[in-house]
Image (cartoon, one colour):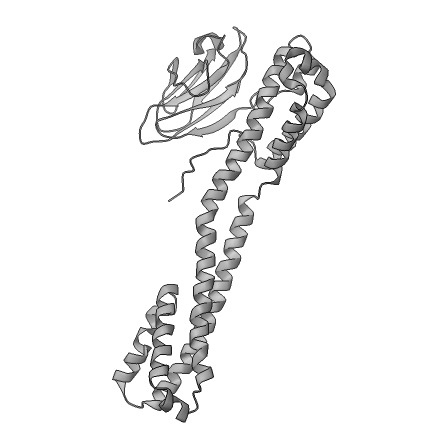
Amino acid sequence: MVRRYLIEFLSHLPIEATNEWMRIVLEEFLVDVAHFTAFSPKYAAPYATNLEAIINAAKLVVPDSTNVDIISGLTAELEAKMDGGRIELQKFFNFVVDVFPHDSAKLNQAGKNDYLGARQNYEKMITLLYTAKTFADDNAAAFTAKGYTVLMAAKLETSKDNIQIALNAQNKAQKERPVLTEERRKTANDAYTAVRDLCEDAKIIFVHDYAMFNKYLLPGIDSGTALPGTIGAAKTINILHRAFAADKKLLLKNTGPTDLYFGLSPDEVSPVNNVIVLAGEEKEVLATELGDIGYHYLNITNKDALVKGEFSVKIL
């Protein structure tokens, strides 16, 4: 089952591409900062410093591939410890046969009958090594007489402890991965939202300057590229924050299995129902059909309580 994260990426570009776009926008802002401060005092110092810090934080987050590599390495280490435990048990069982020949009850008591079920199971292997060590301690004199020393028996406990430590490390990394993923997505979204809002103000500041306006286009959707995305069951999400001209057209596609609703909203969280696009259909609409063009948040609502939706939006 694919895990559904609580926080979805706002950017529809890969992380690396998003980070590069944010860096470029920051550089443009530093050149054009006088225009922004004239537009609003919020862009005065320390705005630039704070924005750079947010962008750098997004760039420095550990990618999920690193967490996958860490877990893979811990799993390999755990398997190596399991191999060590198997070797020690094989040695031990050979001595059990020598110490208690033709005694199936003793073999069973020593754990021999549990070996096949435990050799590929971490928890069962730990239990079996404990059983073997206990049996060796209880019969120490007989084992010593056959050459199986106390130091040899101690390796059973060492193997048990090594497997337990490696298993704990693997479990810890696996449990931390979803938490780190949510933190990474939040950090990335914080940066994306800050830069996106700056770009939306830039479109107002430079509305009559085509060249300057184009420097602050959002990646993907502002450049005329279809913006794909998903929306969870019973959710409303914001996919774009910008001003729309009355004659602006958009192509709305519903590529998923459930009906979706599109509309302009005064905020990024309010549900919308201005335009419905049925599952598998597409519509070309004017911005005015999406609602009040004085609202600058293009939202999507999925009313289905069970099924996630899929869509793409293109500004024509």
